Picture 1 (cartoon, helix red, strand yellow):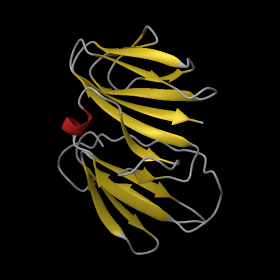
Picture 2 (cartoon, rainbow, N blue to C red; picture 1 turned 60 degrees about the vertical axis):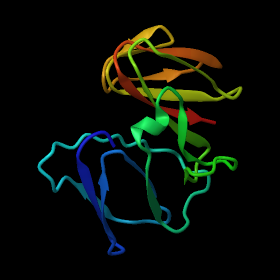
Picture 3 (tube, rainbow, N blue to C red; picture 1 turned 90 degrees about the horizontal axis):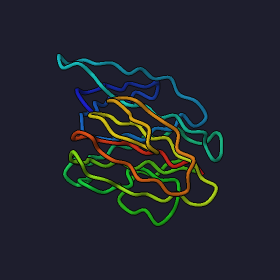
Length: 164
């Protein structure tokens, strides 16, 4: 989440608030009713990425973890993953990984996708180029190339969803 806080309440009686800088992974599993709202005075700016589950059904689940921006400075950090080998990330039931990075103006980051994978990249703040296409804050673009280089035109934060 980029700014503010979102309060989550569900039909199992759970109530929690997710602060800016945190990432939450949630699975509706076999079914859940929930609401999300901004109970604070700071405008809420968040990103929700919906993924097709690897296996449908199951027990609803959720987990939240803080990923400070300074920990992702200049490098893509895995935030959530449906694959083994990604310790200290949020587990998800999907053939996907979610990565984040913060970049200073003029910085470049290169990332190779596994063969056959695609990705969706969002610039959450600032301007960046992806595959030579400029993205403004909150723009997104699909990436098909096996390897690509992304450039930050301003100080920016990017989120990358790798899709297997």
